[in-house]
Amino acid sequence: MRIREDGRMAEHALPEHAGDIAPEEFRAQGHALVDWVADYLATVEQRPVLSRVRPGQVRAALPAEAPVLPEPFAAVLADVDRIVLPGITHWQHPGFFAYFAITGSAPGILGELLTAALNVNGMLWRTSPSATELEQVVLDWLRRMLGLGDGWFGMINDTASVSSLLALAAAREAAGLDVRTKGTAGRGDLPVLRVYCSTQAHSSVDKAAITLGIGHDNVVHVQTDAQFRMRPDLLAAAVRRDRSVGHRPLAVVATTGTTSTTSIDPVPAIADVAERERMWLHVDGAYGGVAAIVPELRGVLDGVDRADSLVVNPHKWLFTPIDCSAFWTRRPDILERAFTLVPDYLVTTERGEVTDYMNYGVQLGRRFRALKLWMVLRAFGTEGVTARVREHCALARRLADLVDDEPGWQVVAPVPLSTVCFRYVGGGGLDGAELDRRTAAAVDAVNASGEAYLSTTRLAGRTVVRFAIGSLRTQWRHVQRAWDLLRAAVDEAAGVRAS
Image 1 (cartoon, rainbow, N blue to C red):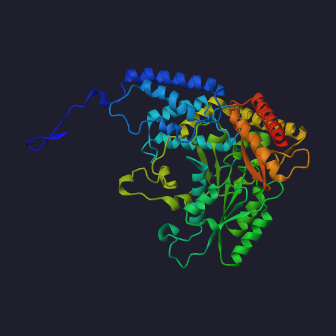
Image 2 (image 1 turned 90 degrees about the vertical axis):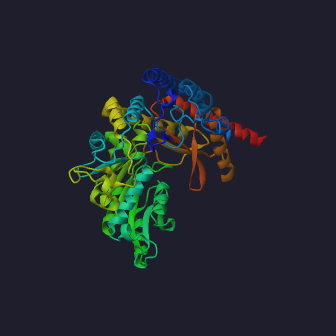
Image 3 (image 1 turned 120 degrees about the horizontal axis):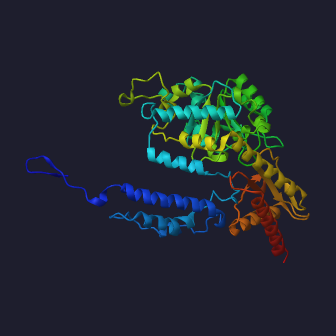
């Protein structure tokens, strides 16, 4: 645009290359990209699981500034192969056993494509009724698959960290402290607020307390039993101590499937304490909650119907591309009270008759995440999902049996689900530090092989292998190979040390 002599705006014609990709070109490149994705999924096992690039290598291969003129999409895709892929750690690899394996299944990938094409913002019911109502329906489907009763309000967030943040924000609102209006700074009338979780709880609980102004020092980490589960008696004792000095117990977070060991906290006993002490009970089932889909594993959510809120991540063990975190609460009025803020430009005539998800969290913009989850559940069916989760747990038990039968190795935590924690203990005569060194060295050697990717954690002060099975593409041969590599690596480390 430019200003004419008469003060009016004169139009400039846009250059041809300033527009979007033409439909014909999009169709051609879209087919090429789908072929690329199909080939990638078919051949991902042939790639090294853990990226081998050096720090700064990917950045050094990229220009410092964006191109002035448009570049062919084929050139962009070529650079994905040349520059981006070497810096990718392949979470889709069947040998990915680190952290919690995640899988972007084919139906989920296609769901992401549709989500991007529609590109809706589901902040209000009006801004796309299907986004809101499909989210409600698919979360009701999932709730019933997990064996939960009625009376839960569901919504999809990006991650469990945000879902747990919302839960603790609701707990703060339920306490009637008027933090929403007055904040926490400079208030002499506000007691110290306390949040309780086990020593095995996810760090997102701590980060939520930091973000909400509760303070990291006010997260009380309750000790666990021999199976790494929160001890309700110690929880009750901690609450009594805090009340005796004038602190305000706010919430307790129980975990069904802790990050290090996948231990299952005793939710019914924790619920007893929460109800007696008038605390909000949030259950973090981000990983383990999905196991309740399997009838014989439904006990992982025992007592959860007494909780105030629950999070389960379909992107962890339900083959839905990241990110997709299912959050439910039995007290949506409290959550809405904590976050509702409706400026004039967001008022609609349907208000009060529909669910406007913007009123239940921090974000105004909301991706249409329900679409990919809906497509995954329809493509797999409850039977297909159940069979895969059951198989992963069977693979873990089979691995645990192998470790137990192997001299010099020891399983160090229960295996309730699909993660096995074990360590090298040698044949005697080695101190703990040396055993830690050999365990860690063996994991490093496996990761360097490119065939598998493992992580470690610390339990009872010792370094242990954390072997998490959860990829849609993992078969027993992948588990067996990683185990063989571990044993060979620790033998080699022992030989080097002996020489």
